Length: 262
Image (cartoon, rainbow, N blue to C red; front, side, top):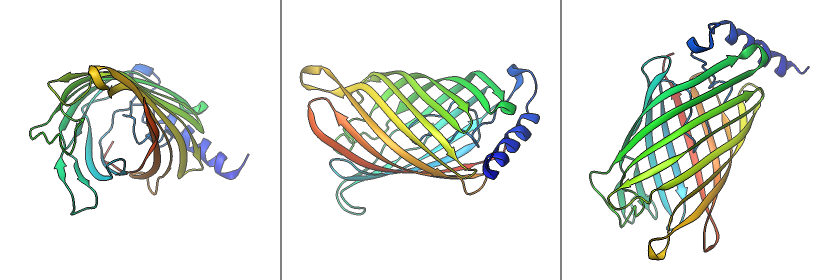
């Protein structure tokens, strides 16, 4: 067995020792082994802050968006998406706008750990509301007020892991196109600090002529580096396709995570 693999198994066993025996009482803190996908809401409950940067698309734009995760207990937490800023063309040029504010309540339905075997299973649910105080449809045409209900899951078979989310968005007023969505990924830990995964997303929230909905989807390979137990940085290149639109749209994503406390 390679040295890095032995060290990883020992670390997993040590983490298991800190977990209570009863599955219903476990905190199941697995984010050192399941790396959060850039575009998927994590099913575990934690105290953390995120900063997302997105560049590209058509028209070309740069977006910076902060997010906060808070933990109220072993099974309950919340997500707060602060208004992100989108600048079209280059920073300082073109049009720009702050986006909506979103907040969600997250409940862990199933968190089971068997770290001595390098495995864990997580299932959570979330209700999230989104509100935009200053709509700027000319800059952000697909944003608005909405309510989303979704389930999130993750499975660890160290060094492999998978995670995903699926749900439905209900539009309130104009702006957002409601509909279903599914987003999932498959990843692998590459030693103790690096990981790679492939994220795939599909939804029917593309607005077509005549009020119809179309299918859109994306594929995003990504790589992440955990420089310390508290810091994670991930980089992804997303290729998006829309029904009836030839060609792909390319977007570069950067995610920075800072974990706070237990």
